[in-house]
Length: 105
Image 1 (cartoon, helix red, strand yellow):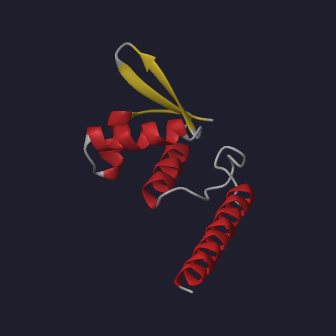
Image 2: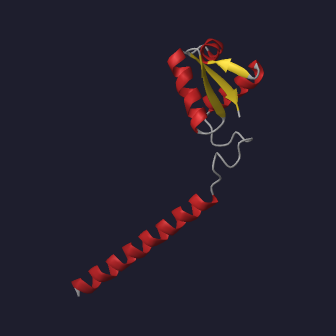
Image 3: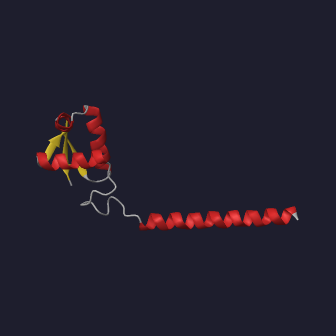
């Protein structure tokens, strides 16, 4: 009798796991990716949104030092946020004479 109960419990657990996997796959398929919609600000942190707006206001090209000074953050923090935006495909990094230049894409 105990073996029958254990078997039923195991079957129920396996079915629940399979349903959970199916739901996760469906959510992943339905979720929009950041690269698919570059004009939208969805999926970005507040700091990343602020930096994108700042770069738009400054003009076509800005440096990490300018971003750090305008946002009142350290150069390293500004560089980190800008690199994250570059990985998402929102900005492009150009290196000229030892200076990092950032351009909107």
